[in-house]
Image (cartoon, rainbow, N blue to C red; front, side, top):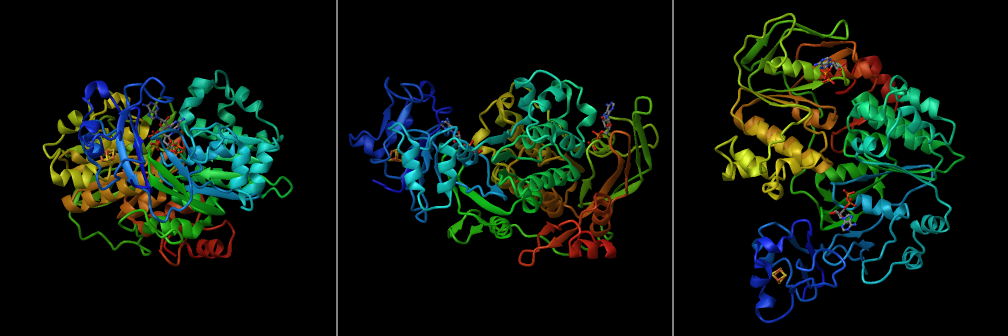
Length: 605
Ligand code: ADP
Ligand code: ADP
Ligand code: SF4
């Protein structure tokens, strides 16, 4: 018996018709005649009758783990819960299912952030706070009720919230995580969707602030991801609610748009008379840092159990997360810390030249969009960051380099093998992930490849899946792996952070950086996540201009000059966290903001 261990069976993976019940055949208690792993039978509430259930009373715990090894579909997890975790779950979805520990505390007039990987129970927590599920306090065998929940939280900061919720006194507005799904649920024009949300009479203001006006009369199914995200934000913020939940605000947005969205959310929280609470899940750390007043870190084992910590200051929360160690919880969540360089990287002029390219020009249609690129040099073994707003020509430049778009002016006659990960990933062959990746590299399966590529990109659990069945984040990780696994002179990654959660970004960044260093590889990375760019780039290429009209790309520059160019255009300055050196966005018009602008030091002040 292992009191502190849980057994989780992923019912989407458990496929007894294809495995011969290896788990139960080899389970030591089963072999001595006990009923540890059994079939669910006809009376099961979840899953199929022939799928397995595991008795957490009889199971020997993680030190045994034989069934975990035996299951060919990675359907079983046996986990010893951290001994630091002394409380009971808030909710468990069912037998051998995911359990959630802890709840975030929405605070009137404040923005509360949640930081953690996907699958850790953030949405489950919010569903409880939005009264969409009644938390069962871990006892899934009985009908849950709010009185028991209220009892559990009596005397805590959540008591008032839950009381108001159950009295029907709490209006909730939610922005969904996957905005791409909106056109499937709504048929009509942007205007029709937005007008029905205008409960505070502020819609016009939001439409202007979020630059939605040009698409107001377009059909929802014809607008871009970035436009959908801003429409979804406006639709949520236009409501007159007490509790707003925003599940990721940055996907598809550039940095300027991310900062704008953050400020609008803060503005709504700061409306003194209304006492609104905002809860935000966000994976872009610079934006979360700017946006939140306090922070809950969520940790655990995605898909198995998740713990939402007590609130921390946003500064400490992010610092502890990056450090990989939660102080109050005495919990290590990652073996290695993520560290930032406070000073601009050293000059890289000493490196050999990989390629020189001339001035380039490209335009689409009759005066629709034109791009001018200043000729420059890419150096051997450097990581070149590429930044700029959406619609300014970054992907067009990538396509000119790879040869899929021929520039109108300027010759790109270099013969480089370029491994390219486009922004929109099309890997739709009917093929398994492992077959696909092994067709790309002979290193597939080697211990080197496993440690450097498969592990940090969390590919092991999806190797047997079909490419066509992958989620956005899974597809991204496979595409990054495929890009890095090719033998090439230049690796070009367009938005590797898209669809990745915070931990996957941290891991992908480490994998790309380590790959570049170990292979003396030359890498170009286009991204909007400033922490990712900071951790990866040796130099910077900056795009400016008027999105969708004309773009201009600078030569690659040293980080300090590049960041100054880029951020001056956005009118944003960063200071450094005293303890960790990580960059933090300054409040506009704060003393530091004004001082740094005067000195022209937007980033490395
Ligand atoms: P996050 O928001 O952090 O991504 P979720 O709260 O959506 O996490 O999900 C946490 C875990 O709970 C996931 O592994 C998910 O599969 C599981 N889960 C979610 N809903 C249900 C459900 N209705 N029944 C069983 N498991 C569920
Ligand atoms: P970014 O990568 O910076 O978001 P892009 O290079 O994708 O920018 O696009 C720049 C502009 O060019 C946008 O206005 C886009 O609509 C337009 N554009 C991109 N590709 C094409 C194309 N094949 N035909 C016409 N217009 C295009
Ligand atoms: Fe049986 Fe538990 Fe061992 Fe799995 S981990 S084989 S359920 S004792």
